[in-house]
Length: 425
Image (cartoon, rainbow, N blue to C red; front, top):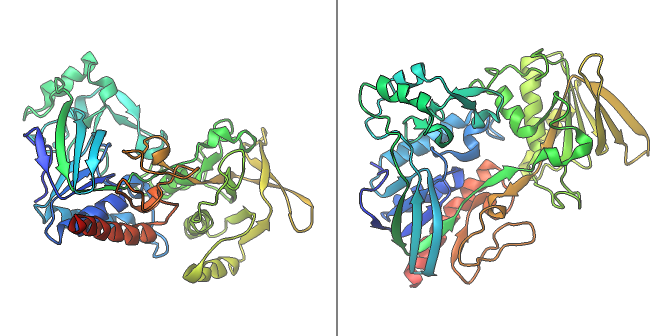
């Protein structure tokens, strides 16, 4: 069975995997199942990454709980993976074959006596924004991050660990699991290979002034749309307008929101067109009479995904509009949003009023905020360049924008690269 927080201050393994999303989990499992020890480091309280926040995988359109559950079962079945959550890489020295890594373990404020009885949560008077739902709902300051959280244990938001009101949680726990005096720890790890699988974040849509996100209530992003459609999301799967919680009758998907734009993201994130078409299926399944509009520069659905595009085109209530939306304004009379776009074929300006707009924002690698160690090379957009001479192996969206299926394939390859690097030493 996978181990969690180590009691010792020094640990060793063949491979260190940084990032506990789908790429990092896959790399760790594939490495462990051939008999090599792995340290899997995740900065958040649970494994799962952005896949946890997704309503359905593409293209199978099945819930992510399927894949996550299988992977967590595989992790639980091995003693070769040591999982470190709430962990950060502070420094890395050395070279392929022998890296010395300093890892900071931040306090969970809940120890391994937790039985998930929920008594602490019942008495907690402090609320926080639910980051899984992008602030659209609240949790208590002591909370279970997700129903499939791993480790399956409560956590206290560190912003409230010193709040006197949290003492009620300590008193309410019959097992002595709440420990507000927990302190950060630093441990040393010696490993032979490092896989950097730190994933991605959505582009900050508040920076795209002309599209109104943050100012206009009924403009949301594609990642928020996933949570609105999810039964575990803030609306229990009902796709409703944030302004008045009314079910939608029409919706507009705005492609390349900030992408392929020299003022924001110059590159294409490759998955956004298909993600919007997937999200359109959420709408059409729940509200068969709803009208769906998608504004695009050009639709990108490579390879076998072209069939999905053809099926979407055949839907009489799914309307494709060629043209990038240049402006979104609110109709103050009803809270609707008006999308303005120029058709790049005809030159005509289109104005369309819909109940809600979804901005297809691009994927930004987390390496922008946390650069890989040892001056491993990154490109002008922040993506890790494969094959650097410092031996740091990239996986998944740390290398380029990828969907879940591509990330899993790439992460499997990263596991093999790490093992090959060990052999070469």
